Length: 441
Image 1 (tube, rainbow, N blue to C red):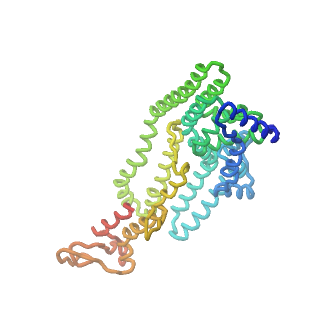
Image 2: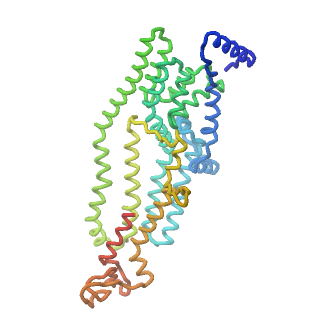
Image 3: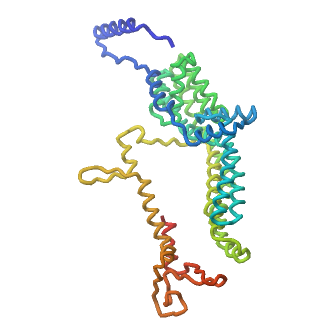
């Protein structure tokens, strides 16, 4: 982008001020170099991004195995990597998708067999490792889709900001800068990159840079492209009335198309929600009936087998099913974190306690972990009491048949009928009440 001579700029500014004084016009502030400021801000917020654990794992795996997809798949994956702004390659992604399951199978099977001496966990980790291959291969697409979802949620707001600015100033460059200043990442970073590409002379004009960026959304959000094309066409309208009509039309296009997409999504939501309800609600309830039958007919089944399936495998499956349903949700709302725009509010993300005239900031995560740990210890206290031989607590009438010598026992550990000398339990009402603290925590 060509730069003006500083001497000429200074001379022009001098005569503008002189003419302004003669015509009694208040001096206007010099126009700020938007693109240069956006370039510095973009370099600060966007370029020096630290490698995530996933990116490091992919790069490490790529140096070991060097497995890559086919030519077509590689191109699609590279596009997803570029969209998600990941600092890795398709070779690293495929290598990690193969190496991670192998490590999971070997380590999981070895450690679990050493602890439980059970073939169940060997088959469990074998199945888990084989299942992991497919989502890990699709991980860049998931991350890219998540990036698009976050950005697409801000598109209605983006068009609104651009139209609001251009209603009084017909300048697309200033309008993009205005929208980037008032939007949160990730869409704000994309708009800054549009301006940065012009500053670095990758494109000759803002229109070329913007059109190139809009092409990345053609397969996902056509109404966003149509709205921006209407905004661009308003720049060439000589009539002020016609120009404002095109700007209003751009807002109508993205709002009406978003409404139509949301209607179709809501209509097609019945079957996925039914499946999610069956897996997440009905199946655990049925387990309360099925599990006693499983224990009766299969004597080798242990509590940790059932806990692994119901407390680990099932919640993870329900979580990914819910994420897959939400990933198909069309654009709609655009939430804004006011703490990002107002640094003075950032401290209220933590719990602020005033003590001795000072404000002590405590991370809510730490408070949650402490409370959960206390509740968990209370919940497993019946097991700990038996482990340290602290004795049982009884109440009610005298009953020699119970472990505590009274009718009601807090812990109520009993001798196993199949394995004499082995204590099983607890079966006491006190232990049952205390175990609720685990769920509450």
